[in-house]
Length: 414
Image (cartoon, rainbow, N blue to C red; front, side):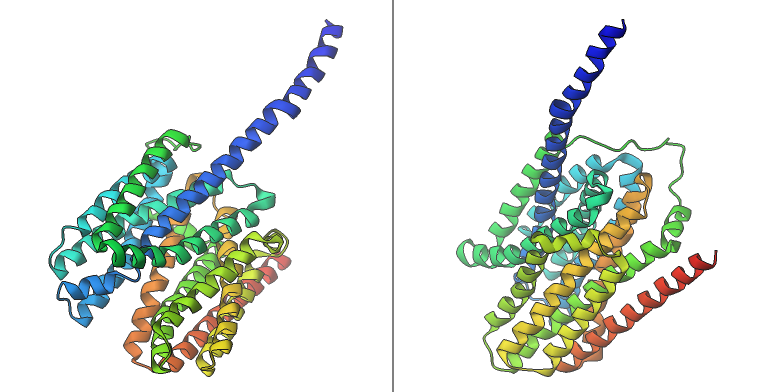
């Protein structure tokens, strides 16, 4: 018996180390990359519509106020969808909500081809926003479950690269298809893409989360708990800050370019520049910084980079200097996004990760709405608006710095 165990145990260890473990690793990596593709697709829907929704609303007879409402309603409704998704993801599992969201959005996109009035467009944007709010929290909860603690920052950096890729190819795709085949074909193609993605998710992905007992109540108390946890609050502030400046930048930069009598295409090139810079930071060896430096510290550094970028953009009109400003903005974006998403994973248990990401993307959407609405309500010149954005994110960076400093002092006194 002793001799048999001496033979069997080493053999089992060899089999695990050289056969089963590599297979498990390959499968885990394959799932991660499949989820990266799903994240690109989820954000592609939003970015592809950026250049076409305003002209579409105008063609239906919408006035400027209604056009602004139609554009902003998606993000506003998205907030509600994010929070609902967060609860459902933890209650019913990641896969079900991701598949339901993909199918639901696929149907909503077909609805755009049937609208004939601005109010109908507003209604479909609202429904689409709620449905779209199911997708991203589910995908990121899945991604968080498959990430490793030691490489979590790098994993989330790659997810940021996915968002950047969608931000670059989405607007170009929407504009090119609209010019070549008509606006309806943008919605047809993306609808088919989402339908196929839903089928692939249902076949390929395995549910890796077991919901708790149905008797457990997913009450507001569980949401309040997440909103009181300091690291998560810092992540939510960081997400809000990032998208607040994005809303201000998307509003003011094209107006600044137009006022300087530059080509409208320059706005798109400048916005693409920050996306390219961010992607390079995400995928090059620089992504190792996300697992070596404290998340909150990277957030603050990124926010300062964005503040500097907005100051440059507000102070100069030279095209070369504007590109430098967008270079700084790209670095700031690249430092913030993986840091805040990794914070959410670090400080949420598996059974509450859906709600944590639901709240995270609700603040994400709130930032977009608040940025464009706030700066529009002030009715300021482009340079003034960009400078206000720099001041806002600088103040929010100082708020996070005070919060983590106070937390460190509190822990050292315990």
